[in-house]
Length: 547
Image (cartoon, rainbow, N blue to C red; front, side):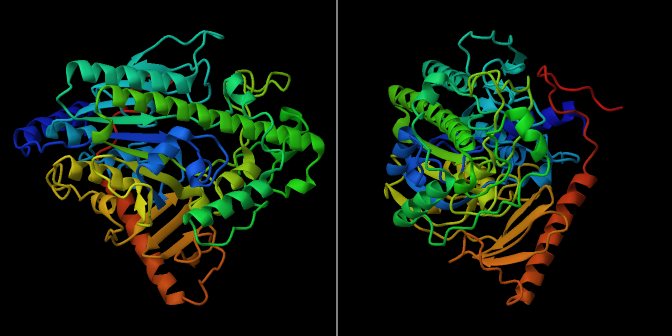
């Protein structure tokens, strides 16, 4: 399908569906979807963590915390699910999923604008299409460069490239994302105050490199000296007391780390003797290693706290425009904390102030294990540590059980169906004739009470890591050659008791479902017309068409 035809089809959907749209219901909610990047399940205070997140915590205390919310384990696929309501493997519309894009692929604005919504975006993107021209956001601030928080080489305003910020010019990516969000909301209040809105607010924090404002880092300078083992135990104790988890603390796995990491023998030469390549016991570290590691965690925490402050600015704007009570706010993270250790961008200067523009530090597997407490593994794996996301729902006029937990399993593919449902649309209606139904389900019932959302399964596949969840049962494997493991998550979300031998028939049946689903997704992409457009390049422009 040619790009022009794709755009025409999308525009036709808005026009034709809009003509037949249901009458507006009074007090329909606005939607604000807030996405953190590489933030662990237990980083925020309201999920048992040690990082100062007062605004995120306020959303939790005034709303709901879902305990079994799922991402895809990686940045791009998660953004695909959040914006399409389908598994990334179905659409291949993110920059990390290879294959052709089915012509029936549609995005959240295409579903919501016919219902009378305006659509806005600020932050990270990671999709193949331009936010305004193709995806139909009314306004977008797009940060394409994830390697530089202070001087990004590529960022766009309404699809048009912006100048690169000057060094020491006061630019910081997290602040810019918040500032543009406030500006777009102010414009909406001036020009479209009678229309509901959908806002996709996608932060890059706390994704590596660990870049933070020095004043924010200073707030954590005396923290984290006890190390990741003590932190994990403390998080786990709090989480059990909060009712977030009921499983034992997973064991650290020092032998598991991203294979693309800088080789361990090179890390000391490139980062200095303080770097630690594996999730080893804190007590085995030297004094220099402990000091270096606690500094890295301080920067990670500073990045999250600054993100929280920008969220606070957006919340203040919602209140100023009298939209706060009528806005369903969802806060999630695109995957678990990252065990990656590598250098990109302009490289790393060991003599520069940690967290400054001249440095390129990463959180690493020790602290990643603590941030993902109490689960196993990290970003990119589909064990619980890679896919479990903090998931907060806040809506003063729509949620009555404030401060409660929801144990309903949910996935990022559920976000679009939920918005369609609450916005007055028909989730079951195919956006294009002959297109398959959305993969996700509306979570509207779970916003009212503890509810079981009926579905056949939840599916996961990234970097050859595979998983399928059916009810409380989860089948999971690490790597192309990794054997299947089977867990009953009702009492073992930490995946410590492999039941593959005790339940061979169940495992075999679940493996067959996973294989059938994965094969169908591959066939869908192969059957689609060859992709005629490319991911946006570093300058923010679409690449040249093939052929």
